[in-house]
Length: 500
Image (cartoon, rainbow, N blue to C red; front, side, top):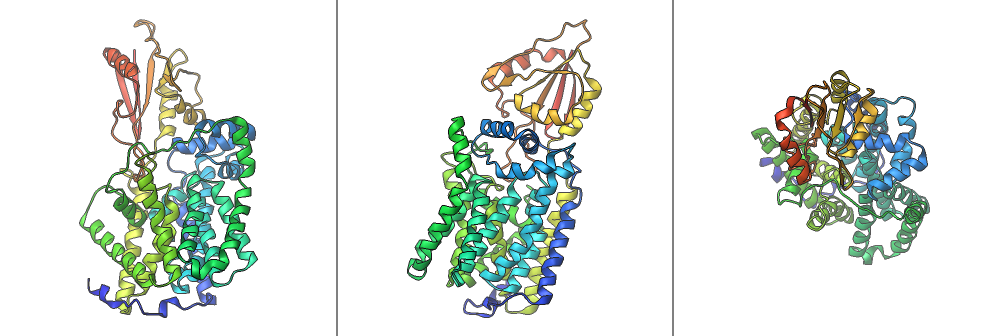
């Protein structure tokens, strides 16, 4: 494209080191308010899906019980987010109240992004990156989900911001602030360990220049590591060391490209001319940003931060599948800073603002899809299913969820008197008997759809009990009672099969 010829890697104008002006500070404040408004739209419109009900379960129970439930789910759950969520999960919480913490943390990321862009590149790039984060559909989606991913992104931003400030002027206050954000991150999600890893690799690659910082960095990481001691003692005392991942498949060659798509426009599955064009522009500006910053240590830091977590996760996923865009969301901030850098480096002013307007418009279109495209951006409708179940299930009926984990969302949404008899509980299988034909009672089989949430927002695929992982004896049992099936009720990601 013509505008690609308008940059020069020797152009120093985008690296001017200065503070925000009063007008730019007002701009950051306005963006934070805009992010707040965008993230409140339809916040409680959709039902909590399974992972969100786990958040509610961990946060609403007494602390010791919540910790025990966390450990049963696995060490990929760390306690800090659920502790912070407790006030929002108390006293008859709603979907809106439970998700509000994620909104607040998503808004916090906007000024952090502006400051990180300012320190790493320039004030103008910081403002541009903050605007891109404000209208980014991927960030908005997780700002409206009762999970810890906006906290993970905010921690990555804070830790890298103060690390970069130490590259300019090493100060104890900056190291303490960096240690704080790292500590919060590693107590929130296990992928936060990428933050110190990226910093360590950066220091090794620039050791001659930054040797004096290594001692301070080690001390700050040790201080952050001490914050894990209480949780480590709890884990050792309980003796539960299970680590799992929500990924259900090995990585594919296209995963890294699909992550680029998701980070840019929000992944929408369907490839259109507009999607290809917008992704092409964003990819080019990303490459320009990398080229412009390549000779600077801040550019190296941004490149490592943006590329290392996805690449390393993709490689490790061949051994343990764990490639999920939400896990590697800590790489979204440097991606947007590099895109903003590439946009700002375009020499022709008209080309710069035309490209910036195009990228912003493409992301806003993604935001509109988050709000209104229920073919992609939807969650399992446990709320709707529970309301229907309360109407059709009598006290004499038996409701049989395929897996016992379905009891978590049902405990929040279903208030009827029907008995629940899960079929699969851990490794035990309990096949419920069919009611007598003349008894008037019903067996209601509750099935959730298989999911692949590597990139998709909707988290589920077309129904297939085999793909869902049902044991062979359960599949055979369901096939054997097919003649007694009287009705099927469908909901997003869920279905009820009624047998008489």
